[in-house]
Amino acid sequence: MLQIAPSDRVFILTGAGVSAESGIPTFRGAGGLWRDYRVEEVASPRAWRRDPQLVWEFYSMRRRVAATALPNPAHAAIARLERTLQQRLFLCTQNVDDLHEQGGAARVTHMHGELFKSRCDRCAMPPFEDRNTYEPPAEIPRCACGGQIRPHICWFGEVPYELDAIYAALSACTLFMAVGTSGMVEPAASFVAHLRGRARTIYVGPEDPANRASFTECYLEKAGELLPALLGC
Image 1 (spheres, helix red, strand yellow):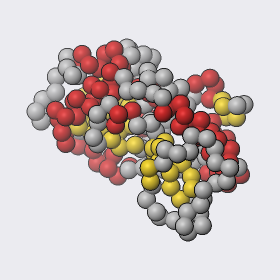
Image 2 (image 1 turned 135 degrees about the vertical axis):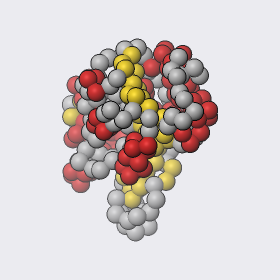
Image 3 (image 1 turned 180 degrees about the vertical axis):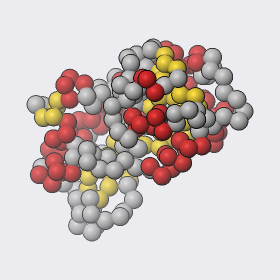
């Protein structure tokens, strides 16, 4: 079982592998293709400008898939640890589903956005809950300002969300754990390097991440099978 001291501040980063254990396909699975489109072709500002209907078709499909998924033991173990550590745990996910919240986590930072939220592509209206678009709309919904309603997702070429809070939490943490991440997607792949020599760093996942050499400990097992015992939750 992982030893967490009363003075420790814990940062947990989760990636697509955690959601994959709940049946949600990874972004880069099957060669990164969807209906013969590369994912970058349907998940970018350029794609939105070129064919917003196609973009909504892709995200409506992703919503349908995610809506049937259930949290797995890894989500539950992290949520229990959050209840124990309270503000000493910072949970950051690269995943856009809401499985952490379904699993009981109360404070989740979604650096790549949230699949079940939408926002205006023009004005500063805050993102809003949107669970209606499971089928692509016949016409792109419009905001009161006239802008088009888009998924609240950080697309390729856009800056991830909440980076100030994320880097502040990284700077304060004494224990960093990456779970189910490939170690290839920036800036998250560099988080562990940001902590070199300053924190205990742990990786959990079934396959070696690209940045394995940066971790002080590595456990090559499925998160849902290992985390409940590792975290003692």
